[in-house]
Image 1: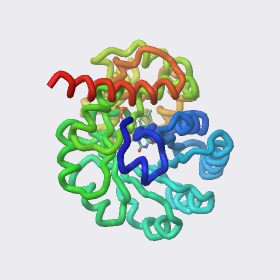
Image 2: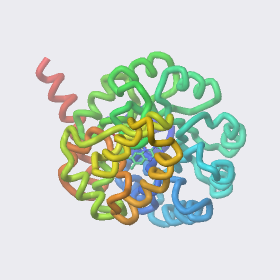
Image 3: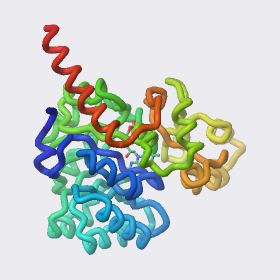
Amino acid sequence: MIRSRICEMLGIKYPVFQGGMAWVADASLAAAVSNAGGLGLVSSINAGTEAVRNEIRKCRELTDKPFGVNIMLQAPNAGEIAQMVVEEGVKILTTGAGSPSQYMAMWKEAGIKVIPVVASVALALKMQAAGADAVVAEGAESGGHVGELHTMPLIPQVVDALDIPVVAAGGICDGRGVAAAFMLGADAVQVGTRFLSAEECTVHQEYKDKILKATDISTIVTGKSLGHPVRSLKTPFSKNFARMESDPSVNKEDILALGTGALRKAVKEGDRNGTYMAGECAGMVKKIEPAKDIVEDLILGAEKIITGFSARM
Ligand SMILES: Cc1cc2nc3c(=O)[nH]c(=O)nc-3n(C[C@H](O)[C@H](O)[C@H](O)COP(=O)(O)O)c2cc1C
């Protein structure tokens, strides 16, 4: 069975993280992934700090396995959430959108494993120096906020630079992707887009339908002009967003206003003025299935490829 030092560090069976996904990753999805032997992550972006606290408590009722919380550091209530997770006895955190250095001492004292998401070697090194236990290195194939580098060149460069474990993310959707990530030196994978199709994922049915209909060229990156590039499904809304960005007569405030709350609209309402964040691998997602089947397909698929490949050599 594929295992790595990350499994020992976090007490999980399989080296598979379900990505923290704003508005998406609730107790239902996180607990299902943890129960399946992976690491479920509850997102801290939904209706406020107390709602996240409730979601953490709900997750604990649904699973006795380890799970974590993802904190987006640019959120206005990030400081409050940083404190709340300590109060709630959360033991694993992933962080996005910047450096969690200012909270590191508090979290370490509380015995929390801290795993920042990075998109470059420089930030990965900074996180290691700040005391991170591992990093998630996320390539620009991924859904949601993206950096510049892609998974294939990013992972080995981060692996070479660090001593701590590296979790590969971005474009990993089946056993082939998991096997490739391990070949690149990763200790685990983080998967977002494929879990959007999990039975336990509570996104609006319209979101799931759009993922199932996606092809290889169904995603678009918007928001570069705002300094926050985001990968989502191509829809009339996202294409209009891209057109507005390239039109110099449209001011930035109008573009920003259009994007505000758009992920929530997609996740909760299936609204056509929503942003359906998804990665390039959306075209590989073909069915709705239990999170357990997804986790097992990722791991067993990778094992089959790795053993089959060595048998051919
Ligand atoms: C709908 C959606 C929302 C996301 N929101 C967050 C987030 O709030 N915080 C974060 O660190 N990453 C977020 N991500 C990134 C995922 O955690 C994960 O790293 C990424 O989806 C992996 O790439 P993949 O989509 O190709 O599987 C999001 C991804 C998606 C698809």
